[in-house]
Image (cartoon, rainbow, N blue to C red; front, side, top):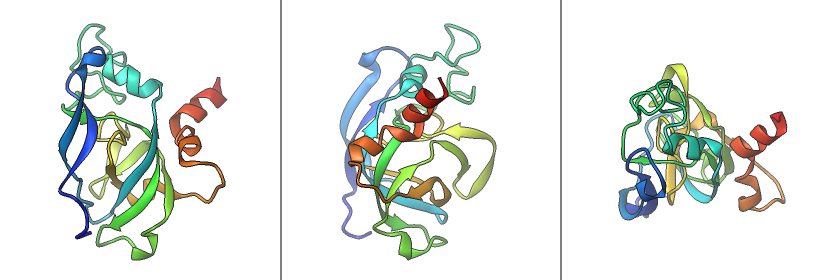
Length: 170
């Protein structure tokens, strides 16, 4: 992990609202994997309804309010890197994760049940309750990064985790 930059490019959501709440930055710290995490170099990230709904505070139970406007109904900690649909490659692992995972091409399961080595009381959504994939690198619990072997491009695959499953249900 010594070859990694200290900072990365990405898009930060600075508050609820329209597109003016998205800030393209060059100085975001590269995330460091915890003991049960993997660090992923993002190859492609898709935009889906959850990204838009989170930004617009659509999930709020109190319309017009934003104190409960995440996917789980909890407040969002800004700035937030959105992006639930991610395809990338594992480039580093936490101390409790096998180094055999390094180099694997993965899709991230966006319904997060573990964060920082702890099982969550209620699921989070990647890019809503925690930083997601609209950046050069992202980190997620290893159990949520699934190895994928496919002839589809990274861009094609990045449309699957949230967007495809939403379309399939409809």
